[in-house]
Length: 551
Ligand code: NA7
Image (cartoon, rainbow, N blue to C red):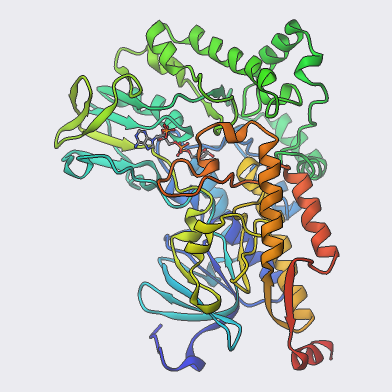
């Protein structure tokens, strides 16, 4: 397409421009089509899949059960897709995304290999104007940022890192052809969810693996296994009920919540519950056992103590086991990991844990890394250092709203947007599962469907009433941010340094970025706002459009 900067009439124009062809963006396109809205998706990758396109490091897999980490909007789709395992690996999830793209013929409305450089709201025409890196121009009435919470990778600023002459790979940009570790000395920097999945796999092939750990992680065993035909049949039979329940729970998975406090259980009862949870595995192996896991320090410590005992039982070397035991934050307040054989990996002769709290990382050299006590040569450095989470996908791009104000600056001042979807000063812009939504603490597939449906309903409503401009009020945004903060402060979450609080990115304000009220409560609050005629939004009706919409 030839850009024609001065010929606005020739600029391709849409009702909605959707940024990102991950699961949120794909469903946004499907919903827009259903509502008769002309939509274009802009995607920097060559394929659909979003986070599952980029994060193809060894061991990458979902830590929500696959039958629940999938779209629920089409019964035909969920009845026809067969997940092979309890927790699907990245290639299978990417195949699923491609299958959805084929089945719903999505690619014809997706501009792949296209990066937006800027988006600017035109206050005269109430439209968004876009420019891509290649200089192409687009315009649209609405702009949906479906950029995902784990998009902008974090590359740590560590002295000498740019001097390292070996191979350096960030897990979120794994080479498509893979990486052969045979005969190589490898260092993995980081021990979050990503590293815990990758480390056991890398250790199998590497000559030697050094794990550079600053903060140890709590991790639950996945107990992953293939699905039997009987299980598949049962899930298909009960899919409707599973999905309905998932939409009402705190975490967006179909599990009935616990009813008892930890203090209403004897220590034997708690131990039995933990043992059963640990044997079954999965993210909520311990957290699902009682009601006050995230709110009561003593109740939380019961579970933390159990998890630490499991580490000490698995890891043979007591010094290593000790270093792997988290002690300075409540369990669950940093994202709990789910692993397959992570702690067992430290019993291998070719794996060394480098405890950066005891021997801090001084920096990198041309040939390896240096701590306060030693220098080690390595061939490959794997950065499993995470993301500028939740806000990074929204602040990366130059987005200008009313009076040319920058979204990046607005989110730096006050990161929580109204209902997690709309930011005052940025009319007709919607953030799918943005800061202040329940998404980061939940099954993302459940929350993205809710978010996309709610946003597209609001767009359809504004078109129906003849509005050209929809904008969250500043008062509504502030009061939602207060509610999000009050809710977080009633839990243990703020006690940990974590990406939930923006702690992992220098200069980011310390604000709890997710709504802890849970998926079901969040959904109800959003529904109430819609029922009220979208209280908290200014919806400017153009009289002539209203008349034509009514005809
Ligand atoms: P995380 O969970 O943010 O983990 C990043 C890891 O990298 C964590 O252990 C960090 O240690 C470590 N890190 C980052 N920077 C440094 C520096 N400068 N020095 C030493 N160590 C560092 O990212 P993941 O990709 O594992 O997981 C993200 C989400 O993806 C996950 O929660 C799931 O929802 C899926 P730190 O904690 O800062 O001490």
